[in-house]
Image (tube, rainbow, N blue to C red; front, side, top):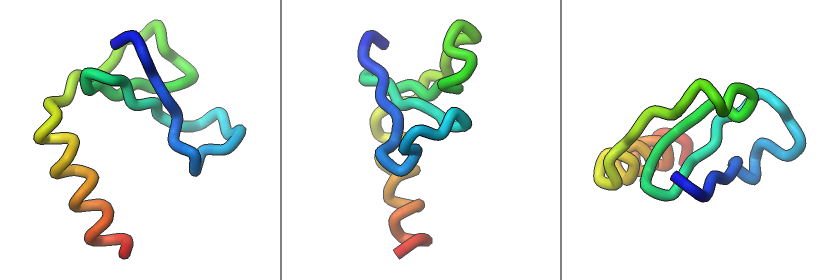
Length: 55
């Protein structure tokens, strides 16, 4: 995971997660702790579920 990004909804908040190309998830305050690997299909399903429940 070379490229990580925070959600635009996080603004300047320090309590957030980052998503990495590849796909992985990590705590932005504790990046040295590693990341949770997630498959692209699982990530897509997660995003779809969120959008369905929020919208």
